[in-house]
Image 1 (cartoon, rainbow, N blue to C red):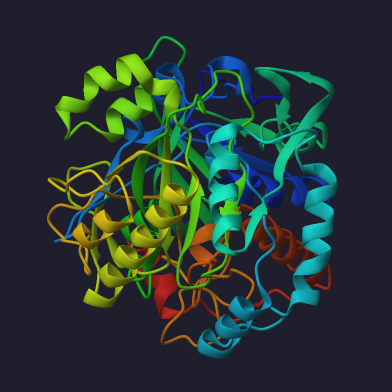
Image 2: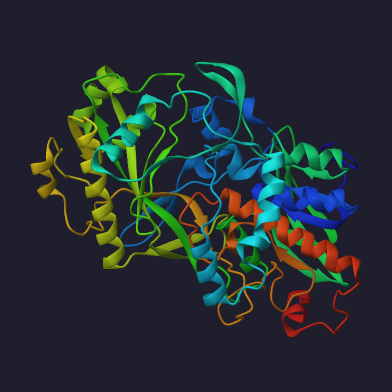
Length: 506
């Protein structure tokens, strides 16, 4: 149950504190609680559940997204990104599309960062275990027309297109708009964690960590039901940070832990295109789009986005002449994207600001790759019968036929391209190469005893596919390693390192 003990007190204690309740934090917390540890999981957002607001609605964005759903990485080519701020983290707001990470990506990480025990067989038990709790399912019937358009266009061009399964339990006889339920963390691992005796403290922001008397002191603020804030102190023997790829490095840097922290934030960067068809393709209450084009992986991939009337208007905000068309014909329109793995960002904290500064840079090759992906996406949609395409480039003309593809740039203009990202990772990469990594192969922060990272920050780079399955399997692997190592009594009893002594200083 949610921890209410000592609700008027400003101090809590736990054997293990988990900061963050997304896929990495929730899986870690569950396994540790089930192993008998006294675990307190802390979440900055509220404990709301999936049914608190319609999915992808304005109310959901207000309730569950950080910053009203818009974070911005600054640079010559800016990119907007989203972060979950709710119990369950990003799993509450994404579509739950699910992949297992390709072997080739793991091979690169092992080679470049010297990560131990990262072969596919090392992660497979974690994939199996997490999939048993958070069910992975294919559609029980035909896909949405928006999704099928992408698939049909790819097939006509001879390109590989796949239906991606979801973390979703479908009803036996699904009806429009009532297909079943997404298997987010609030539906799966969080209840399992609470059933194992774990404690959950929501609406609590941890601002700093300090090493103290062989343990950790967490300083933060608790927001009460009446909206008032009070200071909160939590003491724990060990800490797992799972705040997400932006907030985890921000918390560590505020706490004086900076080596290889926040220097290597990576994205799956998208550029979108709005397609208009002569027929109705965007039907309220239909299945979420599930098809992705994998013909060009790992250079770039393509897919279909949620395309509600409101999101269409937002996507075409720089084309006011289209607003009347959206009001009239939005059911004949859909949003599609091309996505690359390029771009690299840094995360830095600023005095007096709650959220960090994120700065991103793209190479000319990155922008060329995105431009090529956008061109291939246009080819696919025209092959599927689209009559008008609006690329996500400010001032770019609409496209109506293959001859118009000559109007697309060879390299995306950095100052006019509407780039966005839903998948963020690699800001605190793992590995045994301490010159490149922030934590070891199992998430223990280098040079600091009792401090671990347990989210997408640990990934050494883009996963190429949707990353949630990888984050969960990695968290499972690392938590099991922690439990086994701890039970063997092999925790280091060496004197405090220089990094730990610095953390203990006032």
